[in-house]
Length: 223
Image 1 (tube, helix red, strand yellow):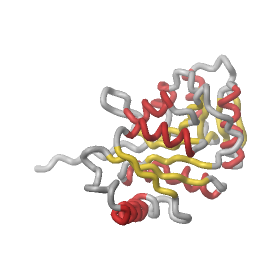
Image 2 (cartoon, rainbow, N blue to C red; image 1 turned 45 degrees about the vertical axis):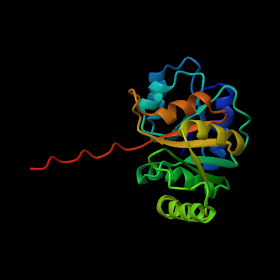
Image 3 (spheres, helix red, strand yellow; image 1 turned 60 degrees about the vertical axis):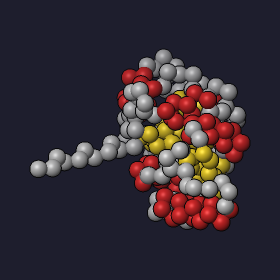
């Protein structure tokens, strides 16, 4: 039986129940005295599908120590009785799309609307993308065909495009359009890594599900 493992904080419990309804799972509540190690041990149970933590917890040790999705719930998050719309930021790589694909399919099949966000930076923004409507539409179709259809085929997700710092746009778009954010991440926190994840977790007003991405293969040396 699938379980959603949570700590007993009210906001985390509400999100755990909403996710359990979607996944036809059972909510399991840890003891308030459970340490991070205790929580990780419980999360490793094969019957546990994912974890939910309150955002005021120092959850990075848990996030880096497990291979399952974990949801962080901000203290000021709005009510999560139902997860009707989900924001899925994709960086334009198959790795990020593959990491979230199974969860996206589950949520969509349960009736949640999927909104895909892509943020251009200075190196990736197409020329005149914000001036030519037909070019923008063509780019959206190409992005959908490359990074959405192969990983979560079915109803076409809404594509939202922005340009600038990804973390800022993830937080802003989610505040207007989403009940939850889903992000694939590398579980690496050294300087220069996971900047979008850090900013999203720090400033989002909705729960953030972080899904571990498998490590990139190490290239073999050439002779």
